[in-house]
Image (tube, rainbow, N blue to C red):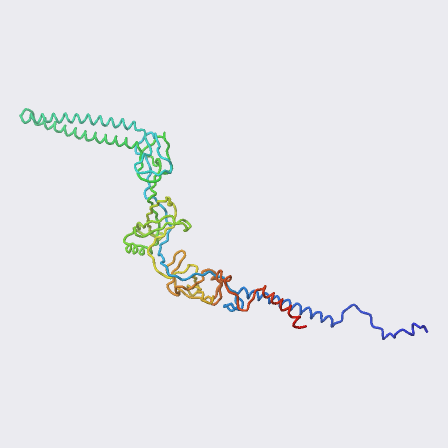
Length: 437
């Protein structure tokens, strides 16, 4: 027998060779540990998210019951004199518009104005060649002087005839004939004087002067051209710009209010009118209401009105479109910004900010309104705070955050900053080995 075979262990005592696959229990333990790890990571993430939401919404001290806060704009309900105005779109029209036309025909020798110049009434603006009209005047004067001499001679003859008639030395028919000749010559002299006046007037017309004070427009004819009295284009146009008028239309329903305001203030010119630019941001000038038209335009249901402005600064230009505000009266009222009032299925309402920074929906009744303010006739009290911006994200009872209030809000009781919390947690970790050796 081989000694090695004698000392070899029996086949049943030899352990089996490893197969390369872990046991079933090890696989279950590994899966369980992986699930626990995933649960821990998910729980930590959920905790951090909830903590961040809690800090942004005020944490446990949030009066809104844990719902996220909404940052809103706010305004106080206050008393003010709310102006009652009539808004309209108007057109600037000159108080006077004159086309400078020649009244006699002739050669234009001089143009004495500059385009766009401010001219005064009676100022010489152009000159037509006066020589033909001077000759016509001299001719009319000569004709008048000749006929006046004939008239004087006929009057002397008539006196002699009357003397002879008193002496019964001449027939009465001769006296009557001479008297008729005197009257005829008197009529001729009157005609001569009229012709002389016409010639003198035509001579004056060769000096073209300004018929009004205002701004002259572009020149249509240059010196050296022949102009006629029937020329419709004229030499230029003069518009009176100071004072100047604004014509606008008001709804027929506001006519009674305007008339009542006129009676209250003692006349139409006592009502103030403001002219604004196209964007309603810049005030161009202030004026006075002039008058209403005498009939309603049936196509638009409006009545034309006119206001006058001094236009000292020249901000109003002829044919310019402006926004007009006619002030009728001032009404004392509780006012809020227009953006604070909302309209729902049950009518108008506002969100009132309570002392605990929650909002309450409250129904109101609106009154007169301007571009930025609205009168509240019922539902609010002076000093209350209302939401002006962000109301579309609100519900009754929600908590709100006012602009700048988060930075000034004191820290909650028992809360600590992340840095202090981290340092405190580190101190606890450092103390644990000493407390639990």
